[in-house]
Image (cartoon, rainbow, N blue to C red):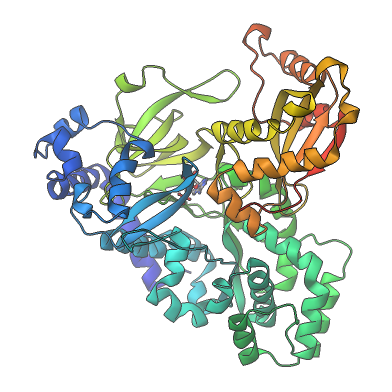
Length: 580
Ligand code: AMP
């Protein structure tokens, strides 16, 4: 069922993957030719452009190392201290640095690469499902995130928000998508979501693809629908938008298309009224050919639930990319979520890989002699081996550690395919925010200071993400001891609620934005009785951890371990206000 445009793109993928080695050398050569004279690279290459010198002299870095340069650019210095091509703005990464979101330079070439990639990554799905651009519309849940203006006047926005702002995207929106632009940019995400579902339901016979970038957002949409379908049906029946939708953009957009449609409303009502919502997506959008969303990595936690709602429709996770670089795409859209691999595209950046080893307990740890470990080129990675991704891009990142750990699952032509293993150092994530052990420690330290004057000491803590209700939220287990015989029963609930709020205040920018927009629900502290963490340790030891090497996890992933603590909870407290 491939179409001409799609065939051309598939051919391009064949060529790119076949010539991976040569293309990688060309990409690096071009980056060095252009940028060897920048202040940053001059310090390592002295104006030279040889690959061997680059490999020998240019150090592996993290965002913290580049931050001084990026901050100087954001504050008004010319960008050629870091890269030769003028920068047009920044991408805001969902990772944080010192509590601030990371800024990644964007150039015209970066924008071109994204445009090319958007054409490419959908083509394997189009080969299977037909040209959905011709067949109908996409119901894609999209939410622009707030933009930041840097002191230099350059704008910083997430990758998706930047795409939603593009002229091309906006021009094609009415033809290809069910959501009007006003609903995407609505400042209140709940109003935006309501309207996007409404427009998707009104045009349900045209919808051929349902999804969002991340699985968590699709699930959030379904849960929201569970709570609002009666109201949505009423609006469709009467042709009137609910009064609580006060955003003028959304109201205007609705007034252009809404008219009373009792038949459609009745049909939707009958579908939503059924006892089980298994396969609801297919029932509501009968022409949908597949569900689109990333469901690997942190998003794995949502797959089982999502599969229930999309029963009968394939779940397609087709791209792997980050604000730093576009990486790869899934060439087998029909494979099971647990088997998804992304084939790297050698023209998107220069990719290198830092070998990492599998620890006995399944977690991944860097080799200790980090600096001595040689980085492996894209085409030389070994099947079955895990690596940390290191990128060099046309936008001023040189041997930059992205923080993702990947495992080589095979090769397509000469380009390796990777399974996403885990995000390094991230322990909690409900949506796209990334909370590290250090972020959590800092927040706990701030909050527990409230207990000290009252004669209580926090002796142990751990955490997990509770996604059993939507939106998900952070749960902290706290074991608290009373100084001088004070009993935990005497804990003042108001203080505990304050501890929850203090933790939220102390978490990073992205957490607070998401919390404010109800993408993350209120943080919860569960106080457990004395000895609970000993029981947790006994559990891990019974599973094979050596007692002498036992380290209490800052975050627990195993359901059994959560149950052990949950069965010992003596008090639950929630933050009562959203931070900021
Ligand atoms: P951001 O920089 O905010 O765009 O976030 C990019 C990060 O999201 C990546 O570094 C990954 O950790 C994660 N990510 C993106 N795509 C995928 C994917 N297909 N599977 C798993 N994680 C992903």
